[in-house]
Image 1: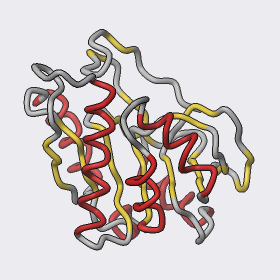
Image 2: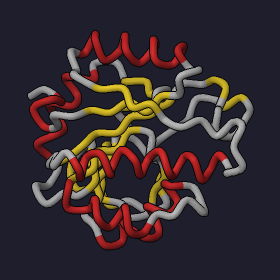
Image 3: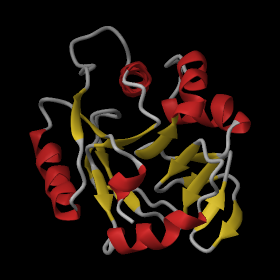
Amino acid sequence: MHLNDIVETVIVKNLKRRNDRLEAISEQLADLGINWIRFDVIDHQGTKASATWWNAFNGLQTIRYAKHANLPCVLVLDDDCVFVDDFAKKFEKLWPSIPPDWDYVSFGEIFGDKKQIAPGVVESQNSWGGHASLFRETIYDSILEKIDGLDFADEQLNRKVKPHAKCYVFSPYLITQAAGFSDHSGDYATNHLFD
């Protein structure tokens, strides 16, 4: 089973000025044979809105696109994602353990709580990540209605959407984030350590 068998549309969020990130993720996706599209996100630099607000706005735009295009689901990736070694084999082995009632599947998060439901898969309504998230059409409206950008998008997803949805996470993670300069925080970010 291939990732594109589950999700037809994979979106990579990317700032025009971060061609370095686009090249890195393009290479990974090509190596994995994953079909994807680039989503040109709006840069917060030179605006009066905060980076947090723009981060949420850009994420919401991907969900608006998915809803408008009538996509049954969409995988949204940040451009600094890093796939684990043997991603394809691990995904093929673990995907059948995701319950069919899923609304949201994350490829790696930091947990506040988790309940093991199968080897390599947990259920969690209290976790943070957002860098590699698979959304089903069943929660598009809830996301668009409840996330306003006044706080980090993954924080709002955690508080306002996940408690009313079926959320599953691959644990240990299948996709993490690279160390490097964070456009969001404006400084160097170490490699994110997901569970």
